[in-house]
Length: 297
Image 1 (cartoon, rainbow, N blue to C red):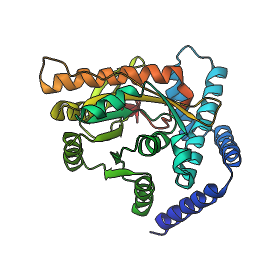
Image 2 (spheres, rainbow, N blue to C red):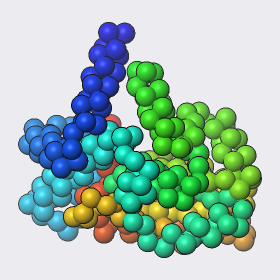
Image 3 (tube, rainbow, N blue to C red):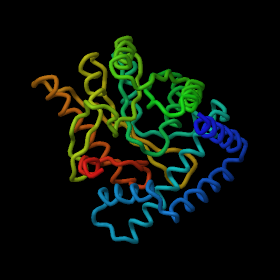
């Protein structure tokens, strides 16, 4: 379709242009685009405002306006960094992320039992992934949502594979089987896991409402014996991405598989909520998320 080719062409042109900009110029450009989008107050900005109001119910309108503007700047910072990431050297990638408590990941990998890292849509998960492959020297497998047009999805796959990631399309049982094999071989799997893209998500309590999160991470940990490690990310005033690896989510000793999955997924949701509450502007959730919002749609 002409529209698909135009979308892909514009995306590719923007990617190439930003990649050539010095980092401060790219950051300033991202801020200008973010501020323009915030002032126009389109549907994505309104949805971010609504989601942040759930995270900070005590905030007044002025505070929500500040948070939403900061959230758009954080979101555009992600895109500007993502466009520039393939042009970074291996050393720049290894110095671009400062994770706390990374021993949970290193110890899990040393045990050879496989590790599942789960993250919310916070800050820049691609930068964190590039750090894993460049600093730790560990390849990993991830899953990407299929984008339209197909050529745009192919660009994302090629981009992430250039950073040392194995990328699977989000295709249910086939992707699950591949992830399980990687984990049984002692490998690393990284999944962005706050928004459910299937019909089999687990209902969780999240900031006082009900939402659905993917069941896959907890099911993978149960079926393979892998560690399940939540990770939260955030930006501060430096160019270096910040993050924390949280303690493993344990598999309950009793209950059916579905019951254990529900308990583990709620535990992941609680860690995500704590990280988002500390850095709400870095949660890039510009879509409907809570079940009552989805029902109203």
